[in-house]
Amino acid sequence: EAGVTQSPTHLIKTRGQQATLRCSPISGHTSVYWYQQALGLGLQFLLWYDEGEERNRGNFPPRFSGRQFPNYSSELNVNALELEDSALYLCASSLGQGLGQPQHFGDGTRLSIL
Amino acid sequence: AQKITQTQPGMFVQEKEAVTLDCTYDTSDPSYGLFWYKQPSSGEMIFLIYQGSYDQQNATEGRYSLNFQKARKSANLVISASQLGDSAMYFCAMREGPNQAGTALIFGKGTTLSVSS
Image (cartoon, rainbow over all chains, first blue to last red; front, side):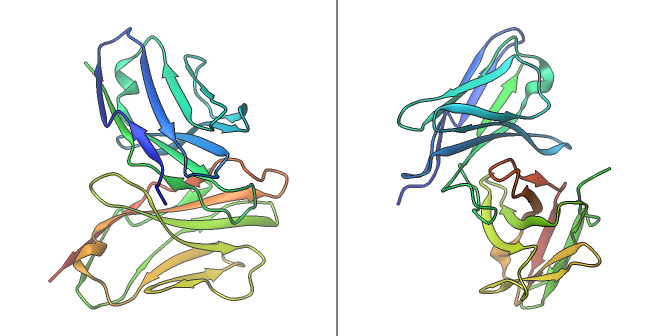
């Protein structure tokens, strides 16, 4: 069974540009989560999509947005990039909404803002 | 206040020894789940073990076990017989529910484990 896949692996942008990150969940998983792991800040929740809808978002500005496609893959878009957006962006998927359902993570996209 | 606290920034252990990584949590929800993840230097997050708040027994998965002390709100990860490949960052995480089922995991800041031969 293929795991969560993310692309690209690395992305280099400059301030003010826009970045698009992609995620394919494990087959059969309908929920997709996005997390930001910035240096020294740990993992912080960004967005949760389920069945094509945004269900919840973390404490991030609106320039962080995304969507989920009918095949449950997802995109994270970051507009007007700032230096502090440099981070590892991790996507996770889960099977169902049970409390004990683990989230399975991809390898991440490392976004660097110059 | 932090919901998940991992007080050990770094831990060092010799191969074949056991090691305990500490995690305390804070929630007023009677129903919650606790998770441990491993993040090697390559970046991927690997799910290790889960403990539910109503589970009577401590969770175990191979060399991993969770020392769950509900009254103290602690969920320490015990790795037995450490291996060189265990060197990584370890994160404790919590999900509150059931009204918030499906919401995000709340992560601690992690503990770096270094295993030496």
